Structures are given as C-alpha cells and as structure tokens.
Image 1 (cartoon, rainbow, N blue to C red):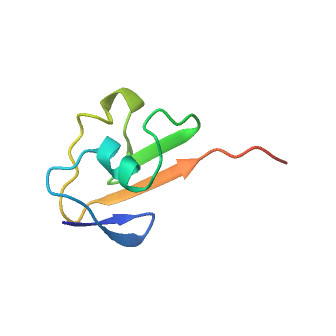
Image 2 (cartoon, rainbow, N blue to C red; image 1 turned 120 degrees about the vertical axis):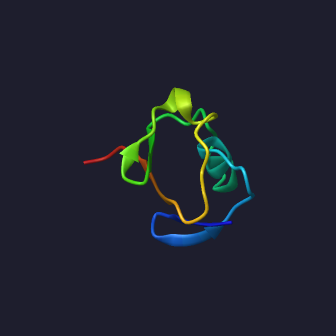
Image 3 (cartoon, rainbow, N blue to C red; image 1 turned 90 degrees about the horizontal axis):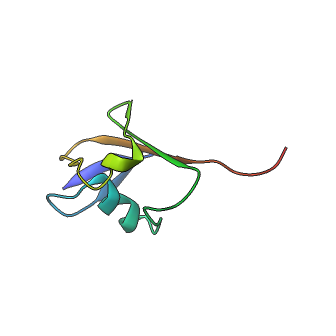
Length: 68
C-alpha cells in the first residue's frame, strides 16, 4: 500500500502499524525525541505497535534535534 510519510509517497506492507513504518524508515521504535502524527492526530508512543496504517494515510514523523 502507499502512504504519505512527511509528504513523500512511500510503499509499505499491508497491515503495517505505526511502529512498522518507523522500522521501514530505519528509526527504532524506542527512539527518543521522535513524535508521530497519523492523519493529523498525534499517536502516543505506547500505541505505535497497535495503531494500524491504511492505504492513503498521511503520516508525519518529526524528531527533536539539539542545537540553538
């Protein structure tokens, strides 16, 4: 299926979860400073492994960076 990750069309496996999308992006699900929104709604970290992603969904992944 195709989803938009940070505005880029990305092919992921059917039945993927938010956690699986992060693995696809080479981001460990335990990564600190990472936030995920699905269809504009923030997904709590504890739900990443259970929230399913559907074809056509919009996913935003943001990470905090250090600096000034």
